[in-house]
Structures are given as structure tokens and as C-alpha cells.
Length: 349
Image 1: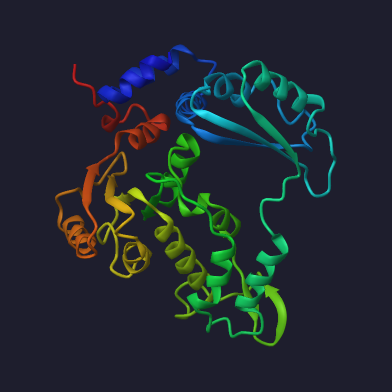
Image 2 (image 1 turned 180 degrees about the vertical axis):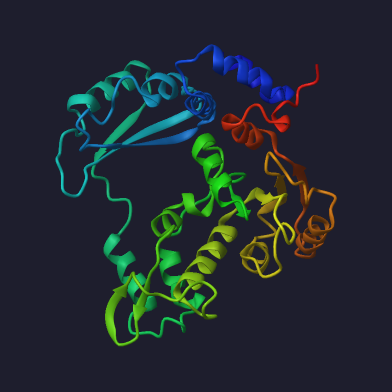
């Protein structure tokens, strides 16, 4: 079943996937695709692998069956994996049901030992200094006019919460919010800013300080375009710059080929922050994916004016450029929900 999908990805035969999915009718389309991506992700994982599990889950932190137990661990390659770190994290209010060496975690440890994988287990591993992160955040916004917050105010927070981004994994986006995050959730081959520690904490969060007190305001903050120097825009510009600076190798960018006004506005974060922040010595190429809505319209593609203008802008920053229309793995994900659309029948008879 998996080999069929790999062949389909290679040959762009999406209707073949559709027939397989319907043959295995008890498996939802999306879960089947995620299973295949999990297999591929596990096979290509190397170095240290980190597994984070919920020690407060009533059914056990390491349930069997599960993607981890049935698909990912069996496909780890012993010659590629140097160590496996198991992090068992309890919810703050408890309960403490599973921990290293006990219950379902003991089962996981036995499985890893039987496969000769070196591993370590940590209970409630403290990944970040939460108090320091909160302090940097409040320093940025407390007792300040909510319309007078700058990117400089958030730089200490961004530096403290920074992380290493593996080369060739960065995925930037503009006008493709829903699709890009569906894709990174399903494939795990790429990281958006919102998939990082800093981005995930603040994604969708409205926040600002109060000019007259040391309090956080989550209810009535200036909108992104309400004033030039508001907390939300200042934070995301700083976080975006940090993410772009940390990117290396091929940096992919998912853009909307069906959107009005071109693929990336001149005032977009992609153009004003991310491209200028890239390290030309670390980034080998900026690769655009121009993704149309399945039902169109096809307003922008690799050879249209707005993309060519963006190409020139990227090259002005001494960055190499390439472009792909309707990147097939993403189009496959689009077709899961609507496989009967003409755009999904791309195999030649």
C-alpha cells in the first residue's frame, strides 16, 4: 500500500491514491496519508531523536496501537540514529500516571532496548526557562503605550527562545496560512515559524501591555494595522527575522497562486523582513511553491509578472531563486478532501 503511494508521488498519479484509499475504506483518507508520511519521516530521521509523551494521559503515555508504536519506531534506522531521548511531561495540574521506567514508558523502553537503540528518559524535562521568557515578554510591553512597541523591544525574548533550524527545513509563507500548516502537520518534513517554540506560543494570541500598569492585556489591543508600532506586529516581525536568520540550505516559500494582488505584497513580512534577514552565506536557494486553489483561479504562476518581480527582489539580495508551480506533495494533500476535482486527475491515461 505504501509503495503505491510513493510511486504515485513520483509519477504524479493522484487518482491511484484515491482508489487505494477507497479500497481500504476503514481508514480515513487523511489518516492514511499521515501514516505514510510518518513512515517516511521515521526512515529518514537521523542523529538524536526526541520523543515527547504525556505522562498524565489516562490511557498511558505510550499507547499501543499508535503511530509511534506501529509505524515510526519500527522504521527508525539503527545506523542513522545516535540516541533517543524520551521526555515524559505531566500536565501542570497532574495526574502523574506515567513516568520513566513505569507502566507504558517501561514498555517503550523495552521495545527500544530490544532494537538496540541507545536511549535516555527524562521526567518533566525542563526545556526552557519559563520565568525568564515571561520576564523578557513583560519587559517588552509593560508600562508602554501599546502603539509604541518596536522590534527592538522583543529582541531579548527572541534571543532567549531561539532554536536551531535544520537546513532545508524552513518553510515561509504568504497568503497560505491554512494550507501551509495543514501540510507541516501532515508531513513534518518542514517547519514554519508557527511550528517553532516561539511561534507556537504566540500563534493566534492577542496581547499587549498597559501604559499605566504592570499588567498584560489580552482583550483590547491595537490590531495589526491600527497603528504602526503595536505589540502584535512588532513581535511577529522580530520572530520572523529570527527565523529567517536561522534558516539555511534551501528555504521554501509557499505562496497563493489564486490570490488577488500578486503572490506577495511589497509591504508583506516576506519582503520587508524575511528575505532581507536571510544569511546569504547559509541559504543556498529560495524556492517558491506557487499553489493554486484546486478550483482556481490560476492568477499567478512561476512565469507571471508578480512572481518574476519577486524573483528580481530575491536576487537583489544575492540569493539564488527557483520556482515550482503546484508542488505535488502539497497538491496531494489538497486533493484528499476533494479527489474528484479535475486538478486531482493529473495522471495521463
